[in-house]
Structures are given as C-alpha cells and as structure tokens.
Length: 208
Length: 208
Length: 208
Image (cartoon, rainbow over all chains, first blue to last red; front, side, top):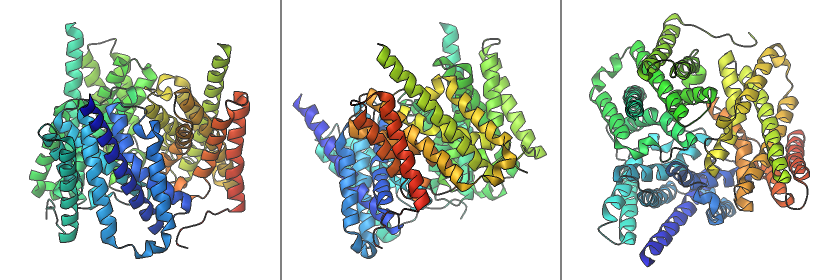
C-alpha cells in the first residue's frame, strides 16, 4: 500500500514542520515575556505540541504521537533552543515575522489535524473542526499560561483562517493528490491570516 | 432491548438540550464581552460542548460524542447564531435570565454526565463527580478563555448544586424510571442554583 | 508475579501520598485566596488529582485511576477538610511549609508519573516528560483557576526539579529496587526544589 505509506509520511512531515514553526514562535513569545531559559523552552514545547496532543487525546490515538515518537519533542526543543541562541535579536524581532510564523504553523497544523481526523473516520465537518482545534490549541494553551486572553478570541480571522484551510483539505483530499490538497489548505490559511493581519480586517461585533 | 434504547435516546435528548442552553448562554456572555461574531460563536460552542468532551475523553469514549455526531455542534452553532440575531436585545438581557439558563444547563449536564458515567461502569461516587465535571466543565473553559476567575470558584452553590443533581440521578436511577430520575436530578440542581442566586446564599469562608 | 504486584502497590502508595500532600497544599492556597469551604475543597481536589488525570488520559488508561478508585478523591477530600479544620492557623502558615509540601508532592508525582508511563511502554525520554507533566499538571490547573501565572513558569527550578526526579527514576528503575529508585528520584526533586527556593536560585533569562 505505497500510497497510504506516502500519506502517512507526508502527514508526519507536515506535523513536524508545524511543530518546529510553533516552537520557534512560542519560544520567541516566551523571550519577549522575559521567562528564564527553561520557561522559554517550556512555552515553546507547549505551543508546538499542545494542539496535536489535544487532537490525539480526543480522537483516541493514545498515547499521543508526541509521546510515542521522540522526534516531536526533539524538534520542539531544538527550535526553542535556536530561538534562545538568537536571543540578542529577540528585541529586534519584527511583529510581521511572528505573525508570519504563526500563520504558517496555523496552516500546517490545520491540514495535519484535519487529515489525521479523516483517517480516524471522523465525519468531514467534525474533521474540519478537529483541524481547527489542532491549529489553535497550542497557541491557546500558551496564551492561557502567559495570562493573556487567547489569540483565538482576541484576533479577528484567526480560527476562521484555520477552519478554512482544514475545510479545503477535507474537500480536496479525495479530488487531488494529498500533497496538493495539504499545501493548498495550508496556503489558504496562511494567506487569509496574513492578509487579515496586514489589512487589519475586522469581523462584525454584535451589538455595535 | 427497547428499554436501553429509550435510555440512550433520553440521554441524547438531555445532552442536546443542555448543549443548546449552554450555547445560548455562552454566546450571550461573548456578546457582552464584545467579541466579534466568530468569537461569540466560538465561546458559545466551547461552553456548550466543553464539559461533554472532557467527560467523554476521561471515560474513554473517544472520539467524544460531539466529534462523532454532527448534531452537537449543529445545535450549539444554531443556538449561538440565534443569540447573535437577537443581539439588539443583548444589552437588555436581565441577569436573572442568564442565571436561569445557566442553572438549566447545569442541571441537564449534571444528570447526563452522571448517567453516561454509570453506563460506562464508574462507581456511584465517581459518576457523581463526573456529572459535576460535565456540568461545570464548559463554563469553566469559557471563563478561562475570557480571562475571568471561573464561576465554579467565584459563585457560591454552583458546583454544589451540580453535584446534588448528579447524586440524585445516581441514587434514583435504579429506583425509578430514568426520565423521572433525570428530571428530578436536573430539577434539584436548577432549584438549588436559582434559589442560591436569588437568596444570595453564601457558604462559609474558612478563616473569617 | 509478586514483584509486579509489589511495584503496583508501591506506585499506588506513592500516588496516594502525593495526592494527600497536593490536596493539603492546594486547599491552603484556596484558604489564602479566601474561597468558601466548597471552593477550598475543589481547589484542593483539582491540585491533587489534576496531574494524574492528565497523565492517565494521555497514556490511554481511561477512565483515569482517580475515577476508577474512590481512594484518590477520598484522600484528597480528607486532606482538604483537614486544611479547613486547621483554618485558624492558615494565616500563620509559613511560606517555607507551603514550599516544602509542594516540593514533596512534586517529587512523589514525578516518580509515580514516570513509573506508570514506563509500565505503559513509553520511551524513557517520553516517560520522563510524562513524569514532569504529572508533577506540574495539578498545580498548573490550580494556578489557572485562581487567575495566577502558573508556578511552573513563574518559579525558577520547578519543572527542572520535577524532570530531574523523573529522569532519575527512569534511569535507576532497572538498576535498583523500585522503592530505592522512586525514593531517590523523589528525593532529588525535593532537595533541588527546596534548595532553589531557599537559595533563591535563578536560571538565566535570555536577552538579559
């Protein structure tokens, strides 16, 4: 079954890429919050693995992949240490770079989460929601730990972008090659999120 | 086994009723917190499904019912959208209505959670606790996301009311028809909670 | 298989001892935060059982031990009630006693969590991380509920101490009797944590 194997490998690669991106981004947030080196690594690891662990616990794939395979934590810790080693540039990190990294991680986790949920037999709509949860879960844990209102509630077009990418993957996966479906979905999330941040898009607020 | 089927259907109905009530109440809280339309729906959905998802993840019924059956999210989103459409009345929502909706959801989830835990073979005391967790879980997530100290710690006679209803269900389910046991349990939670809010009942504070 | 039985019994004892210590410490924190009697018990129970419940949900041992065996909640509630009965001394509780209790619970849960994860077949590094999560999980939930930045991020040498104890257990369990490995691991966590608190050890902060 070479096609399934390829799909599994592709899923693993996307999962790891999202892990690295979110760890880097979470560690940079920890540096800005002036945590100590261990706290910075901790926040990086939680940001990077939190969404996937939630997804795996909920779809019943326990222990979660992050606890079965050393590469998730190894990737997350390496990325966080990289952020620490680059600490002297932390003050100079432009906001758009953090936004871009976050958008990339969001897109990759959205399609990885939705694809894994589909493979575990969830209905398409549910798999889309699970993709969204995978994408926003790690960042939400990070914000709760740092005492901030989670980005998913604070930032317009955040969860919406993740759900759009996950929905794209769910619709496209039977109609195109998996890598096409996954990169299209992740790309849609990325573009939506970055465009919303750049253009300061706002969703309507009820009652205003 | 028509009796089991009826029990299952009754459980599903109570679960859905609680989902709708909590989604409405969570969405109203989101409107008051001036979130955008997506945030309002998100808070409504988390309030409505959070407790049941925690329960199912813990008793090992994965993926949780909310991720297997579309009706949970469909109900929650419909109720949240209803709250948004009624946004012009949001400013005029009296506190007692929010309290009443919350008390109703609390009671319904307490008995639904305890009943499902009993069906999964938990001991009576544990099933009571699981009923309490199901009832307060969604609201606790909502409050954490909105940056508030959870109602379960802030408000007197909140978890107590949920546990009383769950305990009633656990004791009564073998001694009466299930719908009698469930409505009695939910009613006890509702009455206790509303009476405590109306009468401003306070539990003793150690050290005062 | 008397050796396995002994290991299981030892694990249960350590798990319960940690539960009692964390419940006492969590309840004292609740008293200081001026919660009512039910809130104090609730915070005590969450602090005591939260880490173990997270661990069991993640390694797939559902329902978690705390929901299968009444002794966990019974122990936690007894310890919390004890804290309430001693409420008149709560104002006089010295900070070092809270730190000491917390360090003891941290060490006991670190080795209990790592040992259970090893028994469930996790890789050594993953079991170490799971031990750390078991140790810091309950306190992190407590801090989030009370609206504080979690100790694990706030306090230097906290998660580090838990991970050191868990790693010691993982390395020593095949080379020594289990009770030796467990008490050495728990002792290392305790000594590291108390020494760090007493000596005000600080980890480097990136960027300073």
